Length: 294
Image (cartoon, rainbow, N blue to C red; front, side, top):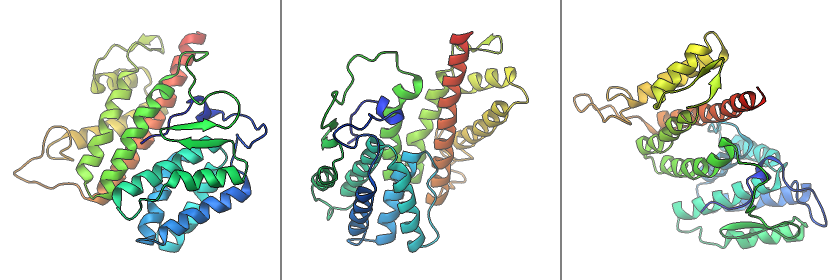
């Protein structure tokens, strides 16, 4: 379950009023960190710490890499939780989503997590309450903006789709289903690329309908730039994963030499795709803004 709330909060959370709305106060940060470490103590501690770390890495926009030891996993998780706390809605969303995913992975974690989270919020005067599937404010405007002041950007429209797929991918990785995990988010890379169709850049309008054609057109008008090189990199990754003799994700597996990707390789591919997706979304918004201003 993905919490529903105004997309605008991910970029600019509401200002403080009678409650803390913008960020998580320090005392609450300590209590939330303690809440997670108590959960971790009920199972494979290192695995659970890494599980939560993955969600908070995504919340702060960094790639999730496994820590070298259990103690480092706890330290790294603590660090990412503190960084994510600068945006209260994003922090609560990451925490709730991680708890929900943990509940699906292990039947022993069936506690009403939202009740514990809400209790910490209320005690520390944090202005949000989780009422699944919504995150609502205790004061001010409703959580879901029905009439936006401006059309949402691609990044905003794609955000919920991205998060659902990324969460599904993370769950598949935790179940050692590497090929499916990569497949789950590879299609988003292709989908986001098609959003560049119709954009005018460097005097040329992108007209391609499919991933490879669009990438070639963008590279042709940005030769020698960072965009050109980065497009080359993720195009190569896409091609490898698509090939039956490579990752065997899109066009089937070469059964004469069936070398499937390992879970470790799958995690690397997923992390790389996440990075490229973030880059593409920002580039689309940048190029679209230049087109409007021009």
